[in-house]
Image (cartoon, rainbow, N blue to C red; front, side, top):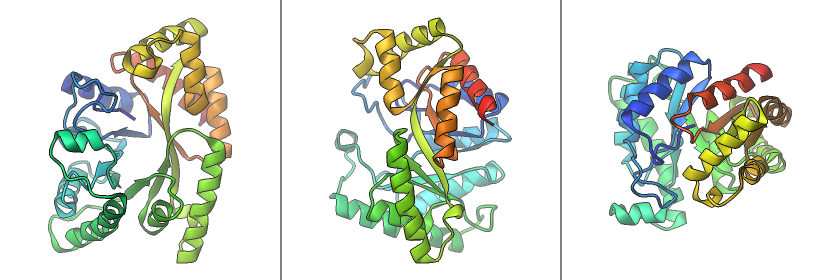
Length: 296
C-alpha cells in the first residue's frame, strides 16, 4: 500500500510496480490524494488514476487499485468509465475502492465542495448505484461480467458496514487492531445475514504501517528513515518508533512480523495492506516479501 501523496514520483511508481510483481505480492494499492495529508506540501504527489492506468501496463499478474477514490473528487459515472478502461487494460485485475471523502484541507485548497457527513454518505450510496448503472449502459464494459469488484473501507457500524455488506467484494479496516477488527467483522457478518448474503463473499483486509528488518540493526536504520517521512515519529529514537508502529501496525524483525501476521490471520484478516513509506528502499519490500512467504 503506497501513500502516493508522500513523495511518490513516476520513476518510483515504475520501480514499485516492477518490484511488487517480481517479489510475489498479491496486490498493489495506492491512496488517491492531491497533496500530503501530513502537511508536507512540498512532497511530490502523482495522479492516482493515471498511475493505475500505467500499472495496468507495467504489471501482468497482480491485483491493484485505489484505497480509496472519494466520490467528492469524481462524478460517479466518470469514475465508472475510467475504472472500466483501466480494468480492460489490465485484463480484469482492478479492485475499485470508493469512499465518501474525509480530508478537509485538501478539499479547501483545491476548491472541491465538502458537504456534511450525512450528505457525503448519501452521495456515496447513490454514487455506487450510478457506477453500476454506468457499466450497464456504456461500452466497452469491464471484463468480469460487466462489473468491477468494489472495496469499501471503514468501521462505522451503521452506514459504512451496512454499505459494505450490500456492495463490497472487500472490506478494509485501519489500523491493525485485532480486537476492533473482530468486533467490526462480526457486525459486518450480521448485516450480511440480514441481507441474505454469505459473509464469506467479502474479503477482510487491514491497512497498517509496516516497518520490517532482517535484524535489529536493519530495523533501527529503517525506523530512523521512517521518522523522516512521518512527522509524529521525527523526534523519536529508532526503538521508540518501532514500538509506536507495532502498537497499530506491523513492526519488527522478519520473524516477529511473521508472528504478528499469523495472529492477524487467525483473527480473520485475509489480506494485510502494508503501508510502505520507504519508497527508495527496495530492501524493505524484500523483507516484507519474506514475511509473506513465511506466513503463506
